[in-house]
Image (cartoon, rainbow, N blue to C red; front, top):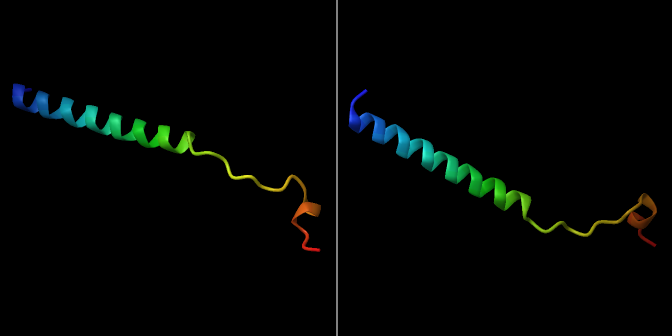
Length: 45
């Protein structure tokens, strides 16, 4: 494999890995919404 192709493949792999890691981090650190603990809390009175 030529040097240019090896550099391109490496840059693409690193870019995809970083972007994927960023979005996984973003999804895992979203604060959870407060939701009712039971069905009775969902009933409107």
